[in-house]
Image 1 (tube, helix red, strand yellow):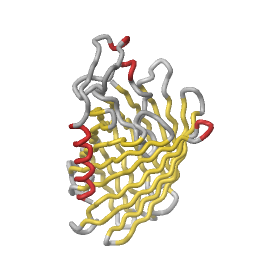
Image 2 (cartoon, rainbow, N blue to C red; image 1 turned 135 degrees about the vertical axis):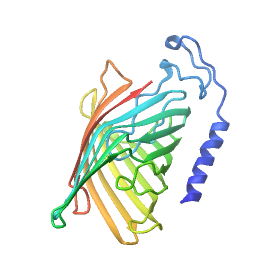
Image 3 (cartoon, rainbow, N blue to C red; image 1 turned 90 degrees about the horizontal axis):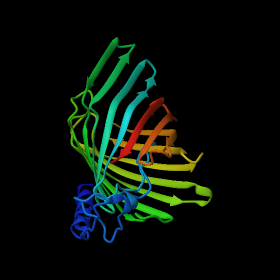
Image 4 (cartoon, rainbow, N blue to C red; image 1 turned 90 degrees about the vertical axis):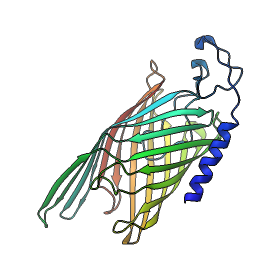
Length: 293
């Protein structure tokens, strides 16, 4: 796992060092792009690609942020409810931003941390009832869209991350963890889009400090419902190979994304995830907004 992450970051770093010099006009509204912009010069408005965010749904797209541009994808509210017999375990996250910055035409760097996260636990048999609130863990991502960054029927990216344990115990597990995602997107007839995500993580065991693998597979379909609204449906599957026992989670996820014609650099979204087995949270509901600057 660590070798895979090092390789991914080295490949993206080599791509960055080889990026061409930029030529950028002062008047972005009428600029003619003669070379790819660099990290210190934002992509002119006329050269921006169609707005694309990793929100909503659990799956990620291969798309990256345009060079020199920031994008904030805000999870305004995310509530997860889980009931297993006498035990209730609910998690609420508020105003959780993912901040992205475009490094090259095919690479961006991303940072995410939840400023407020609340975990509510109740065990009726044991007479336990407690609530933990605090900051969440810090995630650093690097996305490299190495196929289809400028459009086309196929797009593929490498998306490694590392997690720093900034959350206190009870909200997090206190461990540095890492993983890599591989998002693939295919354009289908009649404006349908198929997304396939594979992920491998190196996670801390629940009962000790050993590391175990975690595997995620996602298949998603999306289609424009109107000129400004896109609907998505996905199937999410997670296999957590913890030494204390393998946990298998599945969910069916539904989402809507709305990009107003008057604000093409802003997206509003909402979603609902339904757990398909007892190990998966019963329900998850969320809404958020994304903005490109």
